[in-house]
Length: 419
Image 1 (cartoon, one colour):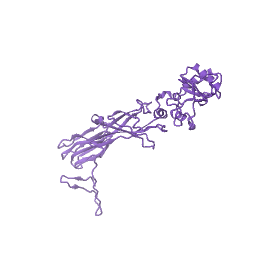
Image 2 (image 1 turned 90 degrees about the vertical axis):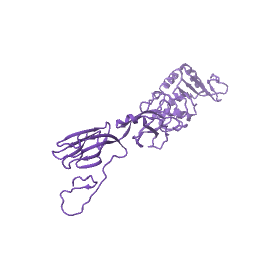
Image 3 (image 1 turned 30 degrees about the vertical axis):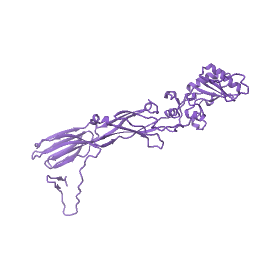
């Protein structure tokens, strides 16, 4: 059989070729293709001459910049059947469909790309009305083209201005930008791909170019630390003619360095250090626990096992200067502490250990602890004291300075120096 057609009276007309006698035949009638709900239509008129002339060959081009696929709607096609044809091509002149005869209210099959070409060819006799296009359709797509965190374009913390994710969305076809860019809405919520709870930040921003902010709250507080990086899913959407169009999701995750820095915020530490203050190298030094090994995971470690970032480079320089001023071998018992390590050690909420600018020592001798305290005075410290067996920290403001001999019955058990 060749194509069937619906005539002007609404009857389906079918002609069968190569008929070979009686038998069972099946007629299947399918609904013609129509654009799905997530396609948008644009009014656009293209029509042939009415009636078209003989020996006619003309091509019309419809282009929608940025479209991935298109379909054209004909209010009517009326040509001499089997002699005069309407061809549908894509932008590369690939044939998509051919029509001849009579049709009304018909959409072309999907044409890949942003261009549809319509060609009418006629023979040397018999003419008909021709065709008319009144609109075309293409799928609307919204895409997140950028979701850039502020820290090295890879990470973030919940403290301004390092909590702003710069996001840009693009609507295709481009012809919708002017009308709908300002109506793009955003959603940033907890990454559903794991079980950790990062919370759902507020999403008040609209527009195609926004800065989404991640703050506590609504990000859950973590007064005892988190143990995981904050992770979020970001989506953009726009509603056109009561139909929502949603982008594919993109994701953003704290890196390990900002996971460490987030501890300073979560544990209510007044100062959050710059990313550049943290390092992963461990310079050679002979000072024992100046930096605990976080990979050991012990509950008494001064650096937790959630990250491997620390602040020790300047500390090593100060400790080396102190060791040079002291006549013996310096015995360091504590150096850098991350906030959680400081919490576990019972340190002050604003401990200088978390800045990588303090050390504790214990020479296992009251006199030698005193001698280290004296030597520390040559290194321009901002703080130094000795902890006495009577509970007094000698050298802190408001307390007496250490002396030798020590006060009656007092043993200097350990010491502390900060720069």
